[in-house]
Image (cartoon, rainbow, N blue to C red; front, side, top):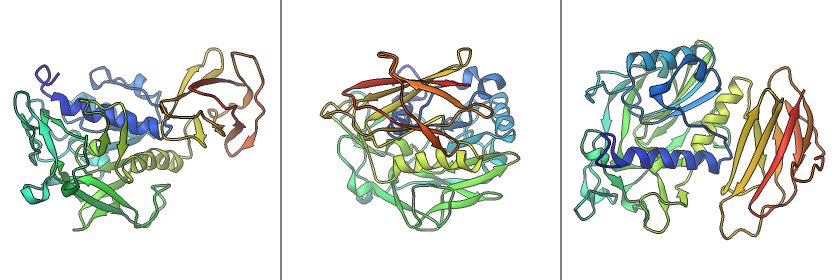
Length: 352
């Protein structure tokens, strides 16, 4: 893959880690490609998370801008829309008005004494990660088998209610050599900042929508993987990395008076929740899958369903037995205690 794509393996590594971070937060997600963006496709979603989408063209940027303007919640990361189609750095983000910040340069760590992060280049021994966002360096895979203690930096959450689950003063770790985008807030407010005062997370209101901007580069790569694999099947994210992402998704929804279609609590981070909708049948299929190979089973899961506006929960049942699942009214929907299971279970929610 590294030799077949100008984005290289690091881009793939980031996207896989991003998916895992969402799954570990019980946030159901789909993958959509910028090449196939359309207004109709975007209209299906309340939240879009895009990190490292550096090569957006004018049409793609305008589609995203219009979607946010109409009420969407965008979670964007450093370098999004910053490069032109020749992969040259622009003077500012194409979506600067949506982000509410202006680009003010790249901040990294070139000091070898503070760089413990290693990258893999084909045919060579592991080398220290270079603090840059330019090709060809960024195509190289970043080793995540051992936590690079010398490389760890932090940013702190400020007092605000826009990041649920993260208290004021909470420290979020990032990989300093991978760097971050220095930004100058315009209409955006700063929710978290580095020790030097540079913004780490900002929030901007754009017409009817919202945009969180996460300045660290490749934040989803802040994990320790398993088994010396190129793409570890088990990822242990550094403190408050996964939590920050979930807080932006859920906080954005809450500010728009919305919620995830299904919330599942009382489970470990290794339990993935997937929701498949059949609108023509008026029902949702909720899958729970436990990826923990050492798990003794999943016990005590609670599912809260948030139906679309104008709909209510009619029935919840297990499709394998037809057994009804009792539910009670909850804020904005219905809550149900789920049965214990070993690896996988499924519940069907009927709406009316």
